[in-house]
Image (cartoon, rainbow, N blue to C red; front, top):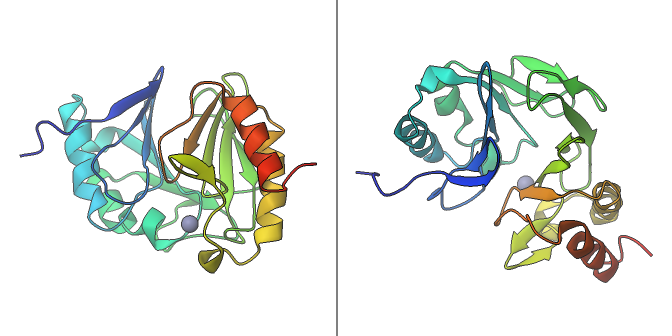
Length: 208
Ligand SMILES: [Zn+2]
């Protein structure tokens, strides 16, 4: 049924799922299994699992689900995805969905993922919003600090409690000079990334 729908490669060992309608969900391959970043809307879980099977894995190969923030378009699919995979759910300490197994703190390194994925507290769009950052490969999972609908934009103000705080978070992630940015909405940025981010941040007044 979903034969022609498969995940897309973003970088070595990094993929995104397709056909989820709202929200972008990522898959990371490590030697001990798979990690999923965010869980999409409620009907995303079955699509995620079917794409994992199509890639030759079993649902139980998903060891961890990392959450960027607890908005419905990021955790709507979480209860079912956790039920289907048995994965450990990891979330930032101040923004934990009900299914959370393990909380992480700002600056903590999740050693099992990509050789060390750093937790960055990036509030504004949500108080407990975090990004995940892999410094050696310069890969950023940006959540909703920046959205990309053809062009990069700030998240919608009506779902973001503190837009000024979010602009500080934009400045924080731009300063990292990522090579790859995986957005919670929109296609990943993989070329001219640092300069595009810098231009965006200037345009929205996040940096001088
Ligand atoms: Zn959001």
